[in-house]
Length: 101
Image (tube, rainbow, N blue to C red; front, side, top):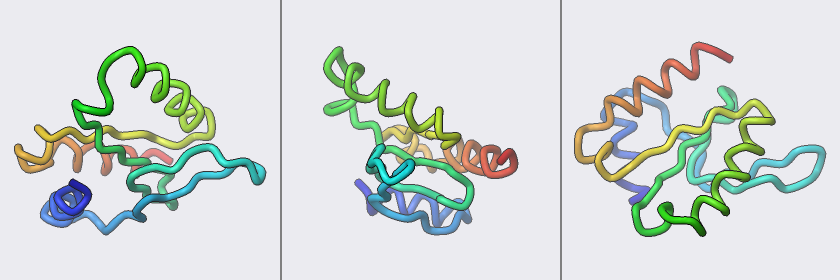
């Protein structure tokens, strides 16, 4: 799926993000994210229905996302539907987040 996300971003005229990017705060590991645009502090996460639904996923993902937001990172979720539909919603969200540092 990572390859399909990268293709979607490229088709929408976006630069290639860093893959499997590790985020640290004061030397402490915070998260490894699917993709990141570090200069914009934007995180892209592919949210599969298999691994990102239900109570266990919420208990795992929400604190992690909150920690990223607290460090001023802007998380943007990507679903299979985003990829199937061409990714314009995701591209617009990335461009909007990049304009507001």
